[in-house]
Amino acid sequence: MATHLLSLRTPHSYFQRSHLSSRQVPTRPSTTTCSFTSVPHDPSSSSTSSSSSSSSRTNRTQTFISLPLITKRPNSTRSVTARSHLNLPLVSPNDHWGTWTALFATGAFGIWSEKTKIGSTLSGALTSTLVALAASNLGIIANEASAYSVVLEFLLPMAVPLLLFRADLRRVIKSTGTLLLAFLIGSVATTVGTAVAYALVPMRSLGQDSWKIAAALMGRHIGGAVNYVAIAEALGVSPSVLAAGLAADNVICAVYFTTLFALASKIPPETSKSTNDVTMDLESEPGNKLPVLQMATALAVSFVICKAGTFLTKYFGIQGGSLPAITAIVVILATAFPKQFAYLAPSGEAMALILMQVFFAVIGASGNVWNVINTAPSIFVFALVQIAIHLAVILGLGKLFRIDLKLLLLASNANVGGPTTACGMATAKGWTSLVVPGILAGIFGIAIATFLGIAFGMTVLKFM
Image 1 (cartoon, rainbow, N blue to C red):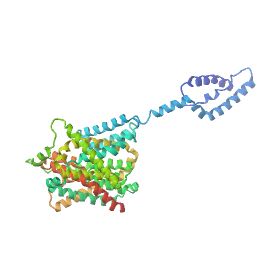
Image 2 (tube, helix red, strand yellow):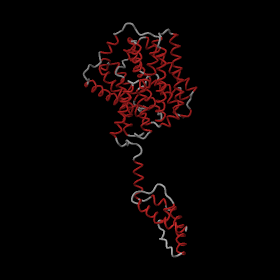
Image 3 (spheres, rainbow, N blue to C red):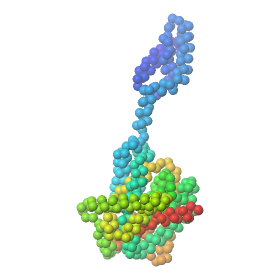
Image 4 (cartoon, rainbow, N blue to C red):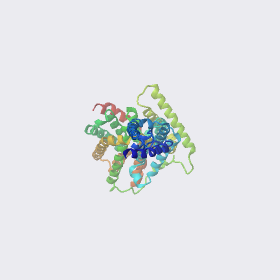
C-alpha cells in the first residue's frame, strides 16, 4: 500500500517539476521532488515494487544532497540576481542626474521647511540632514557617490567666500560696539565650556575622534556650521562621527534657541528705529530685478579665491585642507575692498545658502543611522554641557561688566547659531538697531572660529 501511494505521488511530483522548470526553483522544496527520477510503478511485480521503494529512498537522499545544484540553474540564477538589483538603492550611485536631483531637492525642502512651525524649530540644516539620512538608510539614495565628493571638494569651499563678502573687520568693530565685546565674551565662554565639557564627558568611545569633534563643536559654537566642517576636515574626523556630531548639535541648538527666547521674553522691543546701519546695509541690496551680473561676479570671485587658497595650501605644504586659507583670503579682501565686496554680498549669501543646504544633505546621506544612534549620545551630552557652561559664563561675565542682557543674549545667539539666527532673533524681538550688528558679529565669528578651534584642539584638547 505504501508503495502504491509512492507511485501515485511520483507522476504528480514530476509534473510539478516540469511545470516550474521554465520559471524558477520552488521556494519551499518538499519531499515530493525526491521521485523525479523514479521509475514507473509496476503493480504486477512485488520485487519491482521493493526495488522501486529502495530506488525512491535512494533518490530522496540524492535529491537533498543535490539541491544546491538545482538552485544553480542559469534561469534561477538570473531570477535571484534581478531581484537583488531592484532592492537597494533605488537611485544608483552611478545615476548622476538622479543623485544631484535628490541632493538639491532635499536642500530646497530644508529651506522651505523653515517656513513651517516644526521646520523653524528644527532649522533647515537639521531638516535636510535628517531627510537625507533617512533616505540613504532606507535605500532610496546611496550612502556613497561621486556627487558627494564633488560637494565636499568644490561646492563647500565655494560657499565660504560667498558667505563672507561682508566680513569687513573695520566695519564690524565700528558698527557692533558693545555687542562685539559681548560676542568676544561669548567666544571665551564657549572655549571654557569646551574644556570643562571634555573633562567631564571625554567621549572615549570615539577614540582619536573625541578631541577632534570637541574642537569642531567649539568652532561651531563660535562661528557656524562652515567652521565645524572646516575644523573636522583639517583634523581628519571620520564621516560617521561628523554626521553624528552635526545631528546631535542641531538638536541642542534648537533647544538652546528656545531657551534664549524664553530669557528674552520680558525684554520689550525698541520704541524707535535706528536706521543708520540698516540704510548702510541696504545700499547693496538688489532691487526687484534679478541681479544676474552680481551673481555671476560673485561666483567668479569665489572661484578665484578658492583657487588661490588651494594653491597656497599646496605650495606651502599646509596640512588640513584649504578651507582655513580660503577663509583668511576672503576676510583680508573684504576688509581691504569693503564697498566692492558689499555690492556682491546679497547674491553671494543667497547662493551660499543653497550650497550649504546641499552640503547638509550630503552629510546626512553619508551617515549610517546605527552609527549615529551609537555615537550621538556621548556627543549630545558633551554639547549639552558645553552650551550650558557657555550660557552661565557669558551671563556671569556680562553681569560683571554691566552689559545689557539684550546684548548678551543676542551675542550668544550669534555665537551658537551664526549671523542668520542672530538676525532672526533681533528681527523677531523688534531690536531693529541690532539687526545689522548681529549679522556682522556672526560673520566675524565665522571669520575667526576655524583658526581658534584648530589651535585649541591641537594645543589643549589633544593632551587632555
